[in-house]
Image (cartoon, rainbow, N blue to C red; front, side, top):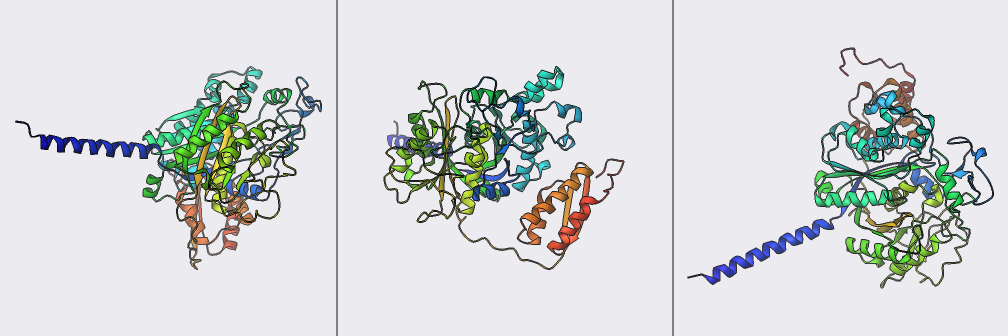
Length: 551
């Protein structure tokens, strides 16, 4: 005879176990993701510290191009839309994009010539990103680290093809898939490796996919971001003929003078872990990604036309993923290209979701880094994300560069959107704890992300003891030239931005750089002595490694 009491008890236990498992899966699906490292190069800013100073000061980093990429005299015309011409001379440009140290990445000089400079830039920034997260590059080899990279332009392949110099290095050196694949290969990373092209939203879509991969357990750490270089004039000609570029050479985001965007270069990466893993590993958590979403405009007014309802939908889906109320969000970094059509559509969508949110106690502050550095296209989303991380850390609300009168097409707004201009910090607005970010691709793929300061980030950090003992500083590189450059760059940065204490600086210098073949070490008991030693080392004839190959 069946014991129905025991059967019922067993059934209840099975149901409870299934409920527990469902709850675990739902929690994993929306688990927060920690940003534990970042690196970047943008116009006017060679590192995150310089990038924040540029943003904080409201600097416009765009420059007039002469012949850095192509001869502008051959292509410039003040006549908007003239076939074969570009209506502006202003661009956002990086310095020395032709410079690269192939030996540092196990690459021959012959191969390096045919590798897209965008991929070379990614290699450099990935190295910096690992080190800024406190990781020795040599020790990440073999890890299940994912790589997710946004890239849309392949100008270098076009340049090489025009020379007729085709060889086995060209295809692999310029393939879009190699944007991620080469990073995985060089650093020995065995997680998913994905290159993403959704046009201007590519890098933020890459971050979204990295978060999903971490939550699904496909990898335990992920490198995500994007890159963009302007190496040939064809794309600028196309944008100019389509009347998308600003003849005035500025991204007048949200302004009455919005007349198009300015093309720009840049590269940015973030290193990600699930929040629980980052806490367990004792990582320094820079910010927390609370949720994100990606969607598509679908059949709208046109393939490249902005779609307000789709933007509203992606914002709401990201908020649901983050389990946040829109009234909790204090700052939003807009896509903000500065176009006559795009800005009003985006601002109306933002106002619908955030400005009119029930329970909003303070205005939503808006920003747009494109007003500082131009439109980095496939690196635009990561530029906005890195800006948000720095903003949450610093607690300041930077101005929208050169913003004058607002766009007259901002009709019937709620009055709960604040557009900060240069000058004093907005009064009556608290330091944002939660911020949002949008990035829209011109073929209709939209991304939205919610970010917050890590718990306890508002507390005062303990100041390391100054110490009186002399500190050891150890440096290494793949070549004597690179080692001298490393010493020279550190001296330059310390003179521009002094470190807090000598012990903390020594700990940072010694912790992450692997012991490479060429080395230099010394003791310093004061910042003045450190700078003197750095200057001397940068000028010294450093001896080569032993001939037997030992460091």
